[in-house]
Amino acid sequence: MLTYIIKRLFYGFLVLIGVVVIVFFLFNVLPGDPVAMMSGQRTDVATRETISKDLGLDKPLPEQLLMYLKDLSPLSSHADTPDNQKKYDYVKLFSIDDNAYVLKWPYLRRSFQTNKKVSEIIADNMESTFWLAFSAMAFATFFGIALGVISSLKQNSLLDHTIITLSVAGISAPSFVLAAVVAMIFGFYLSEYTGLNLTGQLWETDLHGRRLMLKNLILPAFTLGLRPLSIIVQLTRSSMLEVLSQDYIRTARAKGLRDKIIIMKHALKNALNPVITAVSGWLASLMAGAFFVEYIFDWKGLGSITIAAVYQLDFPVVMGSTLFVGVVFILINIFVDILYALIDPRVRLQ
Image (cartoon, rainbow, N blue to C red; front, side, top):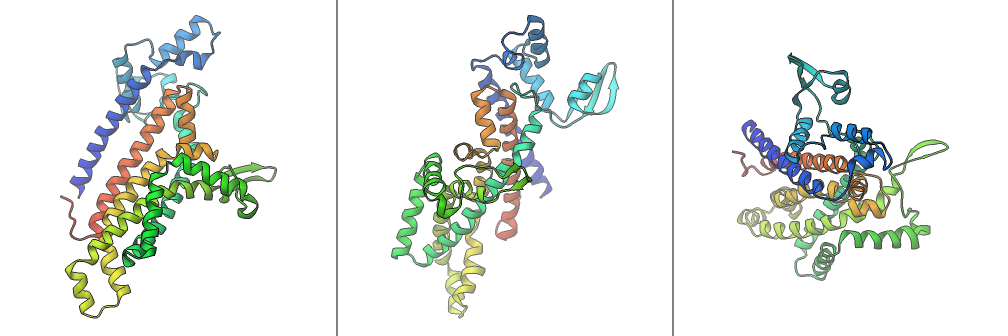
């Protein structure tokens, strides 16, 4: 098990390196002047040269990439100066000449627009995106499995055809279209009856202080969960139909076990593997793919700040958000692979 986890972490590290290289070179071929973004258009030449040197923009592109990878590495070497200590906030391990070999958190640099640390920007917006993705996935998983089981038990009935048709429609509709329709219907036209807002944040500040506004989570979570719900319905239905046709299910019925026990204890448990795969992939994807939903509902999270950073060519914010989501995706997939062996004894991690 430990060997398997180490191997998967190594593969995940290679994936992250690939993401860094691709996004780094993509953003460096786009038009834009990071120095002008940070200093303003009318700054003197000396100030612009200082900022360019600090960002490493005066060096060739391959060297800039190596500098960025060095900033990301938790183990690295830097000149032991007060400025570097403040910049990287490291713990010095040992020194050789003027270089300090240090242990630090990955340094994601600073935003070109606000000069705020990217790690702080991600931390400020991570909670909203996490709760949005988690709520959407919980909604999709619960109702998706329930509807999939019902559909498989009522195979070829009117109810079965209705559920399948609605799930196909949910898969086919783009998320930005669903977001616009749901926002207009439930957040605008029917707002007097639903009591829901067209836009809003997880936390709102007024004269009485900071308040948690869970009702603002309902519409974006519902919208974001419709697509994975539709996929989970179809996966659960097809997997349940396959399991219900197995010999051990027929044997259990022949022994006189009640249908409820057969379905919940034997059939559903063995049918959950493809569903778990879908849930794991969608949970990580929803954290990255909530861009349009967050934008339409004015939900301040990683999606909205990443879209804004793309428009403004704020490279450090885009790269930091991409890496954060990549790490979440890799860790979730490793966790799910381990969970397979716990749910289905036929699966063994080698």
